[in-house]
Image 1 (cartoon, rainbow, N blue to C red):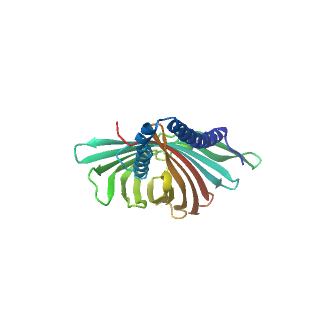
Image 2: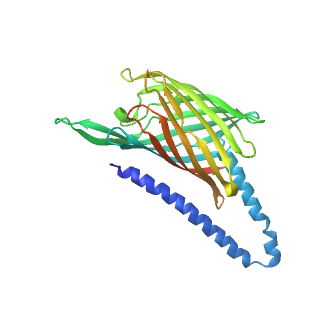
Image 3: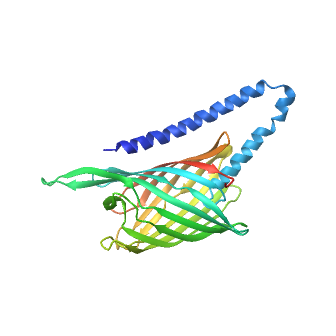
Length: 307
């Protein structure tokens, strides 16, 4: 299986981040233990509240990280491998940067902005004169997807947000990375956070309104139910999809239905909270030649107090 150097670098880097997080957390705990033993008895007693304070801060960060429209700034870096594409068993790689920034609109409303920027390695085959196929690929920027959720500041049992979502055809190289259409539509998210974790759903639909006439029109549906079950020490388990999609322009092979999940944990490095996740998804329904399964790793910087 041919894998590009860029995808290898992303993979190594992501794994390295996770290892560094584990090592740094262990070093920080060891340093704290060592410093505590050197304190006098009264000083040690004054620090007994520190572990409880840290646990409360982690719990607050974990709760906010599971809320797509929380009033905090977050910067996710997400690495996706889509395996088994085509007859040659190729791998597509999608690295996504999607900063989330809440903006206050008076005393009653927030608008939460999310700007999804994918960097893609797209495998494809080129026919040769002898009738064989040359396996190659293209690497570049995918179409951007800005999203805006208007959400009331005062929530009761259900937190919700709604607004517009767009596809901006900025993919390059254009032939392989862009759909060639400007699209827009409504998007909506709702969730509840009972004592055990978080349960919710995100849904949208987009239609193309402008773009290259030789490219297919866009009429795309997306729904992502999610369930997080919280464990001890800021760990949690996620049961969700990477997004169930339907291309209404197709008469056959229009659905992609991934189901899966994985573990995650919120860490604190100094004053910086981070969320680390890993997921496996099996595409139980997918078009012929598309990926049957996906692996995802995500690293998110969390800033619970908006600047």
